[in-house]
Every structure is written in C-alpha cells, then in structure tokens.
Image (cartoon, rainbow, N blue to C red):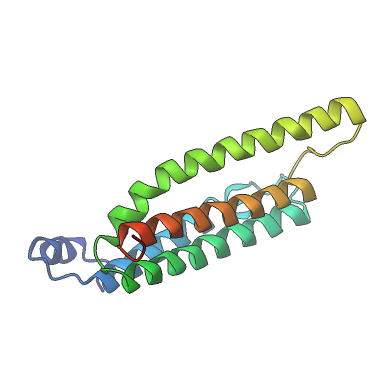
Length: 157
C-alpha cells in the first residue's frame, strides 16, 4: 500500500497491478476517515454542547460504515470479486435515495406527533428518537446495498 506516494499508486493503477483486496483497504480507510472527520465531535467547536446521543450517533455511523463496507466487500468477493468500488459507489446512490425518502417520512410523522400529541420527538442536538432513526437508516442502507451487491456480483439470479 502506498500511504503518501500517490504518483506510484497512480502508475500501479495504470498498469493494472492494484488488486481488488488492496483497493478495498484504500476504500475502507477512506470511508473510516470520512466518517470520523464528519462526526459531530470532530466538526464541532469547543463552545458547542455535545450530548450523549451525539456521541452515540457518531459511534453508530462510524461503526456502521466500517462494518457495512466490510460486509458488502465480502459479499462481492463471494461472487465474481470484480468492480467492488464502482459497484458500491454506483449502487449506493439509488439505495441512499430510498433511505432519504424513508427518513423524510419518519420525520414528517415525528413532526405530526409533535404538533398533534404535544410530544417533543425532535429536539436540539441528537435525541433518542433521532438516534433510533439513524440506526434504522444504517441498517436499511447496508441491507439494501448488500442485496444489490449480491445481485450485481451474480450470487442471485
């Protein structure tokens, strides 16, 4: 693996000498870094208050992205073991659109609950409700993506 030498890695890609397994590790490390760098903890300033649900949500998202990426890689490698990154990136788009529509539906239901029942499911910062929605979203996203990867890698006909 090249950590700092992007030129050498680019030349290896040009000569087609980067294995699917090595590509997976680059993708996994990139996914983990992006998950960490976009977390509430990393992106907040010292003056912001972070509640326990913010921290739980960060941990959930980081672990879900790492474990989900490992899951879909193994599914792809059990199939034809080709084009993992392009499949996962391209198939993520329609799966994410479906997940986004589900989240919008859940939040609309929560807003209706807030209005008609006088509850407060949506609060400042991350709430237990929002954490639950994130967990469902991550499960849905990686379940659907894994199913699509399985189909693309010809495990299912």
